[in-house]
Image 1 (cartoon, rainbow, N blue to C red):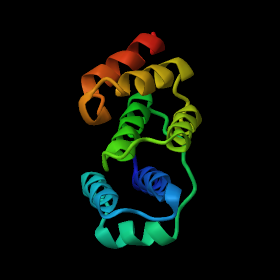
Image 2 (cartoon, one colour; image 1 turned 45 degrees about the vertical axis):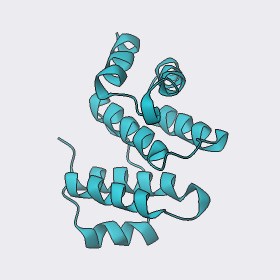
Image 3 (cartoon, rainbow, N blue to C red; image 1 turned 180 degrees about the vertical axis):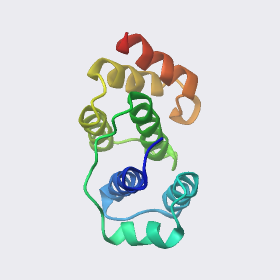
Image 4 (cartoon, rainbow, N blue to C red; image 1 turned 60 degrees about the vertical axis):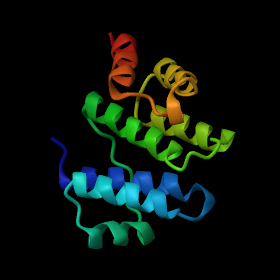
Length: 134
């Protein structure tokens, strides 16, 4: 289980990803707020993170990093807008920074296009990372 500081770091990272165009859309805000609730982070702490990001903390657990990458994939595609290359590159770099294999990240980003709303099902994503991890 991850601790509070790691949870705040994950959320801060997602907020930074959503702010790629200097603005968090309402749908992104609501998604992030849902993740905050899932992580047991109060709305006050969540709103504080929007204006005061904290430093990235590397997660030790490989499975937690995969879950976080999946959250970022969902966040990128939540508004159903065309994913521009800058967002894809940013997502790719986030994955690399988390220590995920570039083969797995590339495969997820490639397969993402073939799913409705570009949402990769969790079991498919886990299988991709399991294959590369072994």
